[in-house]
Image (cartoon, rainbow, N blue to C red; front, top):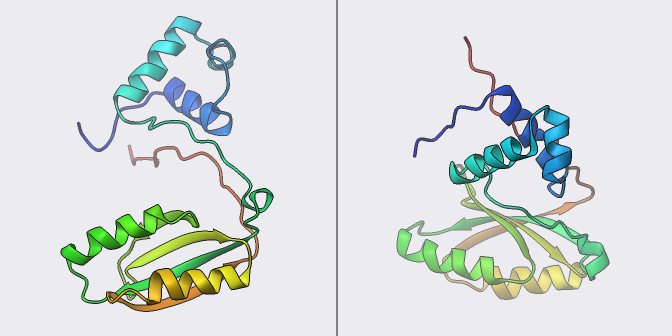
Length: 160
């Protein structure tokens, strides 16, 4: 499968609507984009098969689950070798505090989004789960004051 999929305006509108509300019924979706419900169902199925739609996610409020403090941990791993990266990634992904993990270029190797109960919990997490690991050379912590979600992700405009 190639990296990109050809999408027409109806596909783009379906994707925009589903990103804003993944629970939209096929009937409502079809009416909004001006196609029959069966056509809409076929298009969504094609977008799934093509790997454009990867799944549906449920977003939870960490504060309501007892984890009101969120932070980004910038982590430097040394030496940055494949045999160390695999176990490190597995461990970070298994932590209940981890919300997302990114492998980066630049001075930091990873950015970890975490949600914890408070500063003592954050300190314990950094000391016990990150800096105690031999391969972790440095951790820098940034608290998240507020976050916003952005609009739907649609293909970039290609010069015609």
